Every structure is written in C-alpha cells, then in structure tokens.
Image 1 (cartoon, helix red, strand yellow):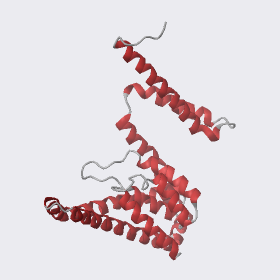
Image 2: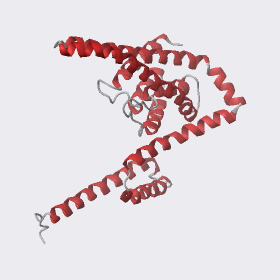
Image 3: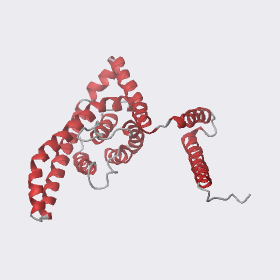
Length: 263
C-alpha cells in the first residue's frame, strides 16, 4: 500500500463527492474522474478506458426528486481500484463496482436525511438575514458527504489490495464467476445508453440510429480507417444534424411567408 496514493485518493474523492451537487457538477463524471484516479494509481490508460465505458453506463442515470441512481463517484473509484490494484479484467471490475455504486446511493440518501434536520437552522438564518448561517449549513453538508465518500474510497483501496490474491484465485479456479462479471460489465454500457435513448429518442429518428450502427460496422471493418470509426460516424451525425436544422429552418420561414430562396 502507498500512503501517498491513499491520501490523494481521499482528497479527490472528497472533491468529487461535493462536486456531484455543487462546484462544477462536471468533474465528478467518470470520463473526467477516472483518468485523474488513474494518474494517482499509476495507470492513466486504464483510467481513460474505464472512464469512457463507465460514462456510457451512467449516461442515462439521473436523480428524480429524492430518488438517487447508482452513484457514479464510488463506482468509478472502486472500478479503478479493482482494475489496477487487484488486477481484475476491466469488464469484470465494471461489473463488480455496481455493488458499491448502489451502496453509494444510500450514502447520499443518508446524508440528505441527516441534513433535513439541519434545514431548520438554514431557515432561521434566512429569516434573520444571516447569509453566514446558511453558508455554514451548506459547508456541514459538504463535509459530511465528502468525508463519508473519502472513508469508503480508502476502505475500498485497502480492501482491493488485500483481496487481490482472492480475486486472482477466483479468476483461476472459478472462471465462470469472473466470466459472469465480465459479461455483466460489458452489458451495462448498453443498458445505460438504452436508458438515455428511451428518454430522448423520437420515432422519426430510428432511421438515423440504425444508419449509425450500420456505418459503424462498415467503417470498423475497413482496416485503414477502423481506428477513427467513432470519430467518422460522429462527423457524419453532425453533418446530418446541421442539414436537418437548416432544412427545418427553411421550411419554417417559408411557412411564415417571410423567406425567399432567390429563385
């Protein structure tokens, strides 16, 4: 175990925990947080891979009222620890981390429950015209949430290293178990994207979606350009979107009688 890694991990976890609801509300996302954690743990490349994959898993998850989705911060940290320190397969680490991500949503709910009792002080400070009192309540909330997350991150770090031998033994002697975790982790990225599509996809967009899949398959099997597959498909998608926006604008102006195409 590396004391410097533990301290840095606790610090960034404290920041990410607060960032979920305050500060930037962007830095805690897996696509940003995982490379930072990878830098601390000594493997930025794994951080980039897990960050991009886990972002797809979490992309459709959002809190609705008081209901919290599986927590992206704890999931990111545990997936990174399992992959780097316990030498787990990346997909298996992503599958196993969902247990901790689900536990993270209860940590957030617990913090909100505790803070609900302190809101009386914030209300009293507001009535008295005391902004410092309101700030104090917010600082207490941030400290509670950040400290809980930092503690869990440290426990996960220590536990991940301590269990590395057990996990390796499972990989050798119970390949079916690790294979199941890998399959679950590989599937979760599609589940997250499916949730997003269920919310955003309109019926008239199915053609573009299927065309995108077809283009990705074709380009991905052309060796000369396969490495830029996603970028090329994204460029094609942007071109279609810009053209659709332009055509829609022309039709709207024409319908309003205030447009001339010069012909």
